[in-house]
Length: 232
Image 1 (cartoon, rainbow, N blue to C red):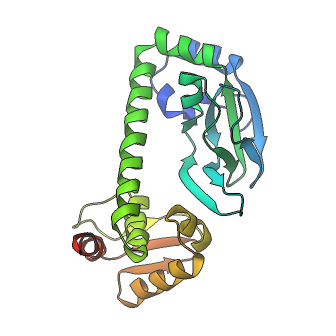
Image 2 (tube, one colour; image 1 turned 30 degrees about the vertical axis):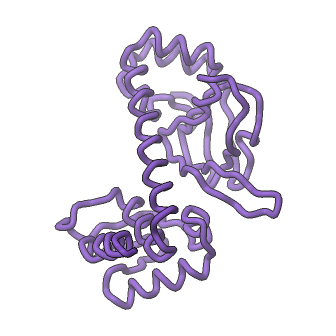
């Protein structure tokens, strides 16, 4: 396996790749370790490499000139990023920074395309990944356009939980984001997140457990979001 965290088998799109093909890709990659807050990919960077997060967590961000942060995507172990620049060779559309200590593999666009051509399973996995990103972005644009801040916070909590069914048992979200991080995700401020989480806790819908968050009543939380969405 090599050094801790340097294992491409952790990457979802390579799950079914034969060991020999995986070994060739691993050798072709450049590997790097990053501390929390460290920049991995600069905004508007002109390189077209593809990146794979094999350990830790990261986030895709843009900062305005005034310093306001806008979060586009949160990355976990097994995710890839930078694929858009590899496809159209345009500059990076956002900055990627470590949100925890992480290990990242970087592969040239040429080697990435070769892997997709040679391994149909990789091509299929990348296609599904891109479709999922489009669906997620569509849902977020709709939420930002139609939902008030309170409902956006509630909807994001549901999304973090994996959008479970109404009759699911209490659902635990491990390592729940800080109120500041959640505020960036839904384009609001930390105080609004704190107020809403405290309100939901008073109503018996949520319960904090250290760094984790437990949703006690999925149906009630979803009903709040849907009710806000139906308001004129």
